[in-house]
Image (cartoon, rainbow, N blue to C red; front, top):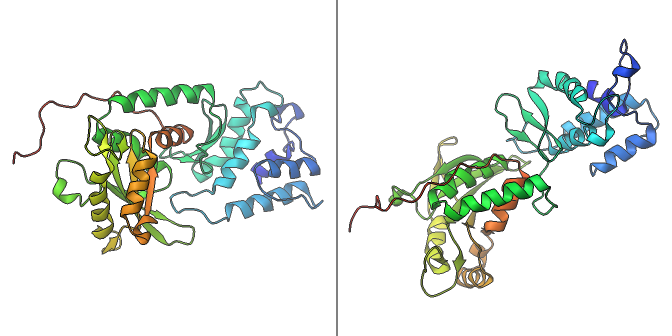
Length: 325
């Protein structure tokens, strides 16, 4: 009800009009508000506050991943509500409106905050995990996001394969809602079975899908041999077959399960020829299980999910820890 008052722009009882920091919205403006966040709720002429409260309740009842306690649509409500252009009775930083909103959210363990892109996001106060709509990596980036993207690109230029996995991919997939993420590591390759990482994702229907990740530091191409940081897609082929053919043990359910889908992730580009070569090698059933992510996907997703940038990459040691043959 408190958030509904804010969406309506009502002045709470006992509060001076000058201390109301939210824009007043009439019936038609409320319909516009919910249209702005890509919903089709239309005000029916009833009491505005009660209608908004019922609408918010419907939004909060939407199916969503168990990794989040709040649907992404509610995060869009907060982002629209706290648009800095709607500042009322205060400056554009909206510190007073933000404080009032956080007093209402605090009892549910949530906190609203402004990021560098001037958008208001939600996070869980205890863990600082972001509650956000599904990130759109194809949207235009702000100046600050472009700068962060360039910094991450510089990091990937010097990062080792393990750093790519541990400092970039693991935080990214956690933020995207994957859970039980387990990295095999590169010190004990006998335990990998073609997987650098395995993880699971819970659908809104509560069905669970299992994913494996095969990561390569540089470019994936279809040349005959591996050169420098470039990896030959033929090397990935056998690893993908191992990934899809070997079971993994999920300790939470006490069973061994097969990987449903395999991510092939490259810190560089994945050429069209490499994708086509792998597609021709795999049969139709396995081909449908393969998902590709290259450098552009990593950069854009990492930036739009507002993750902190990893630290400077350490140079790879000259001496390998692999046992001699």
